[in-house]
Amino acid sequence: MIHVERLTKTYSDLQRGTIVALNGLTFEARPGEIYGLLGPNGAGKTTALRILSTTLKPTGGRATVNGFDVLTQPSQVRRQIGFVSMNTGVYDRMTAWEMVEYFGRLYGLEDDELKDRMEELFERLQMNEFRDLLGSKMSSGMKQKVSIARALVHDPPVLIFDEPTTGLDVLVARALLETIVQLRDHGKCIVFSTHIMREVEKLCNRISILHHGCMLAEGTLEELRDRHHERDLEELFFQLIHQHEQMVRHERARGSQAVLPA
Image (cartoon, rainbow, N blue to C red; front, side, top):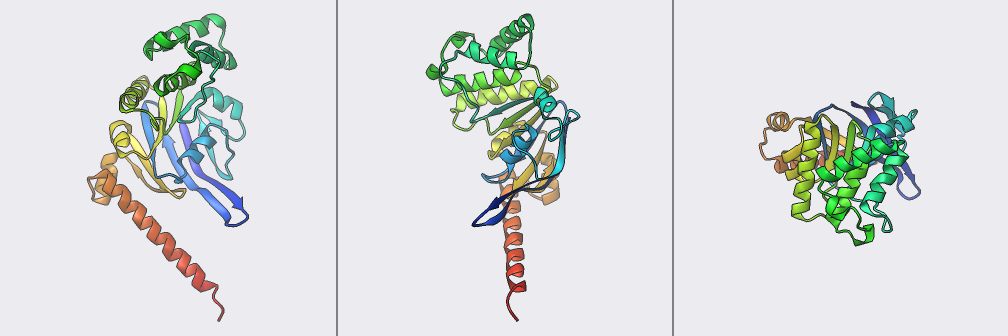
């Protein structure tokens, strides 16, 4: 469903030179599973997801979503995905119903199909009690439900969640995670980024651990625990991060020595 091969993204900075946001990322996400991208801030998670959602172009490598190339077929890719993040906008002057309807029309849904789909979503996500509430009056939990509904309105096979629980209280976050599990059980292919270990343990079928744009490890939780001889995910995570930082420092030191004058 999602194929990512040696995906790379670099930026030029006048002071720091070339910045590598993604360095040869490769993974595959399948229908009916949640694939997790786990890493600290700056690991490259959001960069990868922005490339998959066609809002950012890769510097190198290739990615396809349901067979469509993110670089050469962006409009087809956008029809295949729903995207939810902590920054998904909710318009202050539109009601919940108007907002979801607006995005349904953008996806080209006909009136009868759109109305039926919205009635189903508002019932499933328990949104009917605030369907006529303006965005400016909504709580953070209500806004997140609207974000999910607008991502689901065209019934995409692929869903991308970029740290969606950030800023939510514990009850709203729990309800959101339960919704994501239900979507997986309905056969959706889900990519879920987070820096929260508990979310990974609760949700993800397979994960990649990222740091400074590099994939440090990939597999199921059990595979990673067995491979690295560490049962505690948090300890495993910090172990990999520490090893990677040591390696980077060593390579930088070697590079500095190589350019010293004779």
